[in-house]
Each structure stands twice: as C-alpha cells, then as structure tokens.
Image (tube, rainbow, N blue to C red; front, side, top):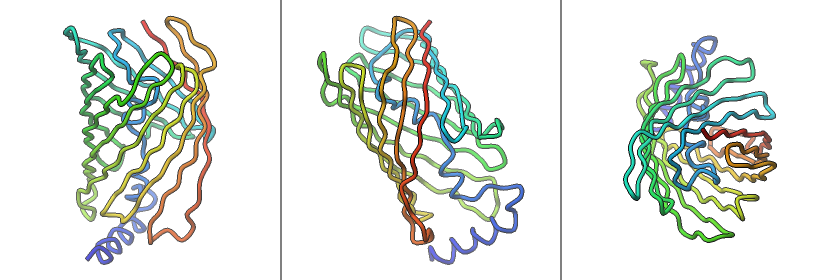
Amino acid sequence: MYSALLLTVALASAAAWETVPSPEQYVEAPDFYQYLHAPSHHRQTRQLHGSTFFNSDKTSGFNARLPFASTNNNVFSAIGGANFDANRHLSSATYGLALDNKAGHGLSLTNTRIPNFGNRITAAGHANLFHNQNHDLTANAFLSRNMPTIPQVPNFNTVGGGVDYMFKNKVGGSLGVAHTPFLQRTDYSANGIVNLFRNKDTSLDFNAGLSKSVSPFMSNSKWEPSTGFTLRKFF
C-alpha cells in the first residue's frame, strides 16, 4: 500500500515540479523546532529576545520570543520566525506559543506555513536531565502533523527527538533523529556549537554539523556537511 501511495505522490509531484515542492522538500523545510531546541535556549528567560542565522548554503532566517505572562516557576511566550532560501525567498513562516520552566523544561505548539505547499503543526517538548555550573544535558522530542494543500498528497506525520549538551555555555553539541512513516524516511543529524562572543545582551555562535536521510527510495544517501553563524539579541 505504501509503495502504491508513494508512486502516486511521486507522479503527482513530477507533473507539478515547476510550481510545487515534493513531499521530501516539505519534510526538509525548516521550522521553529530547531530554534526552540538549540542547546543554549533551554534555560528559562523573561526577556524579549531574538536571533538571526546565516548558513553556508546561503539559507538564512530570524526568530523571536516575546514573554507575556509568568509565575514564580514558568514563563509563557509568543514565538515566531521566518526562514529564507538561498535566493532570499520565503521558505517558511512560523508562529506559536511556548511554556518554559525555571528547571529547564518546556513545551511548545507551533504552526508553520510553507508557501505553495501547506502547513505543519508541531507539538514539542524538552526536559533537562542534568544541569550544574559546567554541564547542561537536555532531551527533546516532537510530533508534527504535515498538511499539504496538494489534493494527491494526504496529511502525514513526522516524529523525532534528540539530546543537547553544553559545557560552560561555551561549547556544545546535539544529536537528533526524525522519522516520517509515509515517506519511509529517517533523518539523522549531528551538530556542534561554539560560542564566539557573549555579553549580557548579545551572543554570537558558530555552528557546524552533518545530516543524512535514509529511505528505500533514495539511492545515494550520504552525510551532508553544513556550517553557519547565529547572532542572538536580548532586550
């Protein structure tokens, strides 16, 4: 059944290639999940803050978080962001809500709009496993409901998770995996981060990583490198 369904999707995508991305491109489209679960963003903050990033493949984006309510232990925030492709065209726009706990735990619910394709609703969470003056270890997980507007492509799910580690807020890394049953596809990622500069309201990071997608419909699956810079501002 999967094979027949995938063949239908492939034929439909090929016929509309000039105007409509493939389901694989839809899964690859970035959303706010990556920003929410960057290693340096797990600790609770009551400040308005945002970030912008630039990658070696010429993609870029910006994200923002606006706290609007808080208790002694929790902060509720409105979140949003946008990502752009190498030609500076909008590739996705995201908005949603986030809850952060002072112990380093959190939840979020976001909607990502991808032009010419559809929407993705993502429920995500992270839990701090260990934190002291030198070390921070956090686990995260998400579930996305992908809702293409193309009649030939049904709604489908992507589920994933990973772990993030930071040492003295200076050097860290993350491992992640995501699986999309509809496409019989699994995505792996390994990333490192080095803080180049930090003061009370500005932080500049260098990021480098590897990613790989595995599927019976992908003949050449190899690790793809990426690098980039992320600038964060706190107000």
